[in-house]
Image 1 (cartoon, rainbow, N blue to C red):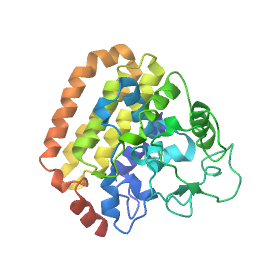
Image 2: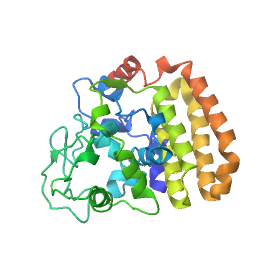
Image 3: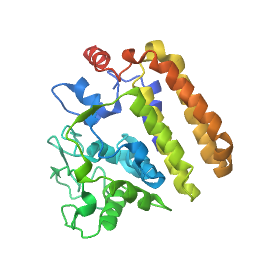
Image 4: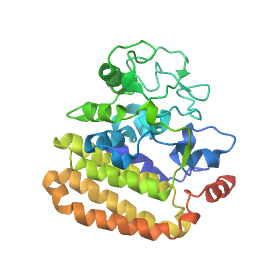
Length: 298
């Protein structure tokens, strides 16, 4: 689980030149990078309307906690290729593809099992309506459960335990094609903070603790995604406050369900207060397309 904190720690301490502002830069190609990094396909269902189980699966889907190996260390998640459950046409990570909107599912970089030594990417599929399909993946697997399990375990060297797989499937089955819009939505402080809140709340509904701990780790990763969008200049105190809140989640994961139950309400209040302080200056953060474009130009 320590690998999950790597993207956050790297962004807080990295001295490499030039540093990445956002981890998504590693796998995003676009003629207008600032726009691509501040927008995403609109979700097929309002996240707050999902069941606690689907919210937990959504949190896992959006965090490196579900994957393993080099992919997790790079900060990749299922959401990297399937942005909000849709196909990410701007995805281009050299280790996994030689063309945008595609990924090599038999890459030796990400898989010790499926690697075939060749670069042969296939188009990233849109997951909307996946529950209505009868075959999945390039091998036409007839079982969605078996297919998803194989992607996690074999394609990306991840781990599955407890309720992990049922929770991820619960989320995927909410991606109703009929409810999907073609609109593109802005990535804002509000949506990013809601990702943290939903993951944190969902963790409290997960009955088996190892899986609940993974959902809390996904909440930590969501905090890291907020930190990435706060410029060091002018937001150092806010970055440190969020890092402290992330460390509190580590303590809860170590302490178990009783520690989570005791600390939950106070943690949520402190997180909300931290977000409120940042919101007053959101136009100066990298949630703001113009601010990000200026920073990328520098």
